[in-house]
Amino acid sequence: MVPVIGLGGVHAGGHFGVLLEQRIADTVHFALDHGITLIDTAEGYGTSEAIIGRALKGRDRDSYFLATKASRDFSRQGILGAMDNSLRQLQVDYVDLYQMHGYSTKCPIEETMSTIEELRQQGKTRYLGVSNYNVEQMQAALKITRIHSLQPRYNILDREIEAETIPFCEQEGIGILVYSPLAQGVLGGKYKPGHKFADDDVRRKQDRTFREIDELTPKLEALRGIAERRGKSFVQLVMNSLLRQDAVTCLLVSCRTNEQALENVGAQGWRLTDEDWKEIERILGE
Image 1 (cartoon, rainbow, N blue to C red):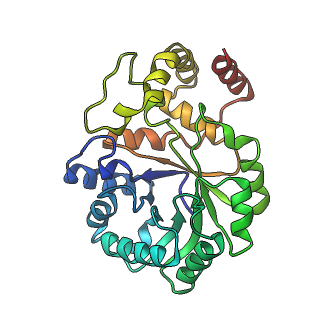
Image 2: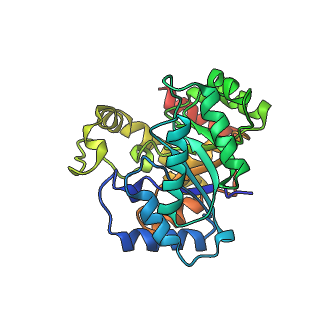
């Protein structure tokens, strides 16, 4: 069993601006104490694994669900090395979920999937997952071993997975752990046209981010009215809209403050009406 709201670890790696480690640790502890007990990180998230590992030190290992990913080399040697390094950085004997961060055309899928199955049999992970795989790639992986989860990008702006991926995951019993449910903060509701990201924020180099902020502001303001009518925040509305999909198991959301973590928790436990959803789709389609 995992919570509906999980904690994404990309912020801990400094991708969206460097944060003080103590601040990260405080947010991790606050999240855990408020039911956000799934923490997701990755080999490719810079210092994230090490910082999260130190933050979790002293916590009861059974009190949280820890997920990480191999991000670079998907060969047998690369995966085995990545897992051992992740366990050292996280200061644990096993992770609950081990995922492949992407699909590689350089390494046979048979080698990749058989290797992570080997890790599962060794007790270094309890469950196996993939990230950024399409249906065809998951079908190939399932011929080798069981896949328990998929981690795709999904939000009300990026809905490509609704056509084929979500139905396939429902059919195969694959849980979906969504990343970027707030579109890297674009749907956070606080950025205005002309916003300038800090020099150490990867979004500074992403033209798509700036274009989205400039183009979407009128629509987001219209959506805010629906949230206010339901007595929810804009962020809670945007996140909750994804939970209409039964196959969505968990939303992975990075947060920089305790206040953001508490707001994220409020995205669960309620449902949009059909009328609300029709209005959301109308606004987005304008």
